Image 1 (cartoon, each protein chain N blue to C red):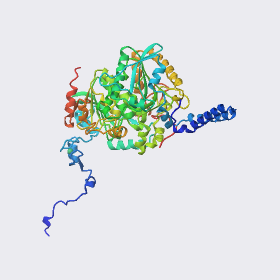
Image 2 (cartoon, rainbow over the protein chains, first blue to last red):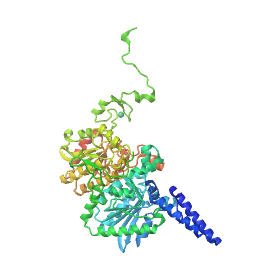
Image 3 (cartoon, chains in turn yellow, purple):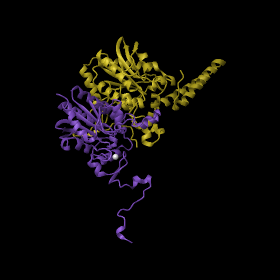
Image 4 (cartoon, helix red, strand yellow):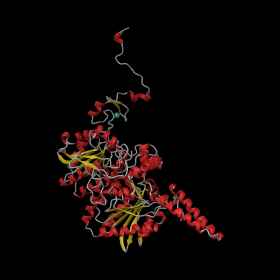
Length: 350
Length: 282
Ligand SMILES: [Zn+2]
């Protein structure tokens, strides 16, 4: 499958193309070029490692937005035995940027909801580039209430640059729709597992992002503001986005360290689009595990733990505590490290 | 020459463009709504409104406390004990915090505590636009959540006045975003306890503050002409290239579109709140 390439992959892709050519050439001409091909493949292997092993935050942002990356419906169709999509907010429209319905995982029904991006322009126009309208959030809440009524767990898949920033959204109360979801999701009586599969864009992502567990793919991103937007504010230059993405701490390992997410789900070198089936299987297995654990909890535990999970996020010093500290973490794994109100960080940005 | 006929006031001709610079800013202000030049004293004594056209200027949180709380004070102040850190090492954040403190004499963009309004005990939080645009970072989120939790325990209502055009505070990155979930979750508990939450929106309220506690009031009040938004008009124009109607995202526009309950001018705000607090029958 041909992928659209990102700028930092160019030399690798070029080398891979030359290897393919040489293979075809040697086959056609019945020449033995095994030695040469082997040498080039070794070089490609090395270059692949170099290219993908130490990705910068900006490169991860690019991968998280990759058009060919598996999107919500790919996961839904890949993970579940069956899916019955439910449409509409019962008030105004059916927002195609937010999909949801009943799905069956190991023969058990659950509610799955996710923001939907397209693989090309045509698909993207159909789903409004994955930018939900207020009605998308209202549809999502309707389905969550359905889940609560019939005691089904909820899985949400997050992949959006944000809520649609336009006249329609403002007129019809996108802020209210997101706020209501935040409030209502926090007290749902059923397990909620959130997976950031691609782009986690600010309030538009959080609007379906309040869960007992928040999982994240290795090359997904999650941020309060796009690196472009941040760069525009800081340096009046959107082209400084790579620099801004270094500061924002939007990668999965950074977010794990800050205590924002619970678990990172692996991706193959170069990103999920290189091996979608592998990644979809990885997400499925993680969901099975977490839903299994959560199914043993009482309603009160589910509500209280979800509340505490978000309640404790924050970094500040407190005059009433003997020594300045960050809000107490629930466990070692997700602890905002340090204990001085600041997480550890590799370097200081100035 | 007749000395007594000398004009008492010299007329200084000011080129139109430079008019602003010619006004001694510490004494007078040009009202952006009616364009009149008004003495600052007059504006201040009118609760920071224009005596000519009733334009509502920004009101610092401490002044708003004096306006709304009985005797102008908290019976118990809860805010001010916690301070922002710089968890991301964000460029310029420390300086912005210092500047905010200087502007407002507050520790962060919010004050909160317990007071009475019209004799009824209530939690009250007020955000201050003068402190980094009233933006919500860890401290604002924590102060608001603590206040709401305290009111749940005491079984008293909550009033939050927002003047937070800055939305979620970029300088604390994702941690600011999570304050939206934190404050909204606290309000879920308040709602479950059957307690009243009145949200007052002052100019401007935006982004992550609008999309969390500010829009979750049982009753939502806005001040006249307040800018209330999710995405800012510039963001919308840049990304979607939409032409935006006049009065877009103003309080009156929101009321027309069914997003807020009422528009109350500042002079009437306290008595309106006091009356609303009498509505729940315990
Ligand atoms: Zn005026």
